Length: 77
Length: 405
Image (cartoon, rainbow over all chains, first blue to last red; front, side):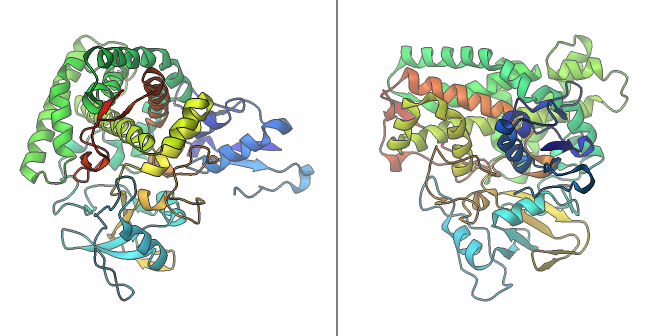
């Protein structure tokens, strides 16, 4: 699994940092998302999916663990 | 309410509750029969009412709809939500669209991050503990609203913003008038002007002697930012002060009432303190106190959920109805503190999702835990039907909650 975020669209609601504090934090400058671990270990992957589903601005994309050439975004639900 | 007999006939907003914790039954009917319904507004215009979770989320995430409150109809008042007064609108990011909204949100979000709010927990615990001490000294009984639910978030937001708590009588009276459905346009204007002047004076004083709290910090860090006028700072202060004390106060008192009326759930919470995180989310969902929803206005003609919404029409997203949608929540009318993490919309959704939500969560966790720990035998001191409900206020809750222990 790989986590990608679109910080331009982030408004810092903090759902990700609340839900998966080992994977996400918020910037001290503007509160927007900071990814702490782009490739979460298996035991944190469910938290990552939940954070993506809760994000009010759909900023977090969870890329499935597929070969680099055919990576595509997984569904959010 | 009168039920629509034919498609497209405008309904009026369901207002009558048959139970203190459930939204008016009219919402259930609409969600099942006419989830995107025509809505007749008190000002005579016709717009739309959304009651399904998926539609509410879609609307609030759709940038073809504007939050500019000068253009929307109020679902509960004959006059506009905000008159077109530049001084009143300054800094009030709740009624802004990008890119202006983005600048304000970015400037303010760093004061409300998960990490910073967690750092406030010890101070909140101290405030909660002091109020429980005072309750214990003077009771039982006690009215939980003035003794606990109202002062705690009020004190905390005052300290965070740098607003003197000793002035609480002024700003609590003003915001209470502004949020009362029955208030006349003149009363609302007078209350708003008074609060506005109060905030302007406070900002002027902070320009002279800036402190480290939010308003003082904005003055210092934003000193190169010519945009941050006194009017804008006052608007920010006014919005955050009102939002910060009315909402959490009502969640604390109404949440306590709900737990007292669901003894099995309260028992489970007492038995397992770790339940409190989920309990807060479930109480937010179950009670969704922003009871008349949130509004947007279409910037253009928009195809939405199979209907054509015309430019300029107001759309009401019923957060309370969405949070009881059985397509999203199993057994939605049950209070279930062990419910798995849910996408409730009690804080809204999209770019305007509540700025202070992490503060509210910490306040609720600390306050509920400490209250039921201090008073394990807490109970209502009146019959349930005698608790006066805030059907007449924008933010739902209880006017009073007499308790004993």
